[in-house]
Amino acid sequence: MSQDAARIRSEFDRIARLSGEHAHANRYEERLLAHVPRPCGQALDLGCGAGTLTVALAEAADHVLGVDLSPEMVRLARQRCADCTNVEFVVGDFLTLPLSPASFHCITAVAVLHHVPLAAALERVKVLLRPGGVLLVLDLFRDTGIGDRLRSVVAFLVDRATQPRRPHSRELHVAWEEHGAGDTYPTVPEARALYGRMLPGCTFQRHLLWRYSVVWTKPV
Image (cartoon, rainbow, N blue to C red; front, side):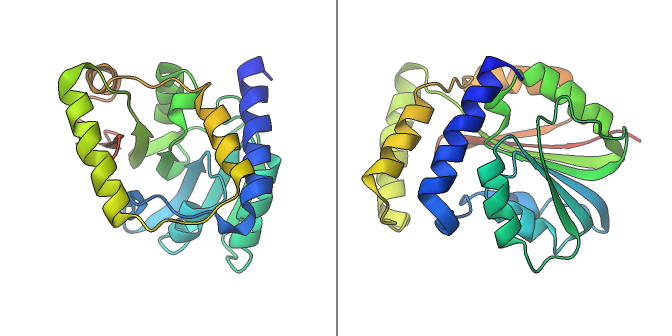
């Protein structure tokens, strides 16, 4: 395991232990679920974390495989999905796990691809998707220029006004801050260009709250 992967695993193990079963779904996850193909046989949830998206995928797919580097996150995900008979989890790095090519009808990646070399991750996803399969990505970008900074001010105000303030410990807040200090994000133009080059025909959408989403169907 690389030093970066070991760091990420350690940080999310810490976050999982501090957050416990109180992990919440991302506000944009519901939008992603609207693009899950119907019917959907095999689904792969990359960086499944505490399983908030995995449990929703289980309602749409025949079988869901959740993969995450963090054993503690997978422990939480297993608890969350305890009643789902069509879900299994694996602790590991999806870039190197022995997964069968062209075996998934849907692959989701929420706030995970900025942790890995993006081009290599997309190449791996293209191999794992079946022809006609759908990739659903939600990730973060970094601001650049005055226009982005003005949007961030609006985003901050919207977030404060619409997102319930969930109480959490000082230790959890510090854990997220320390993790975030090691993260790097692409700008919107950088992300749009890379996805457009590697996933021709994909739909790239910028969202207000520092997120972008990508929907791509693998050609048949």
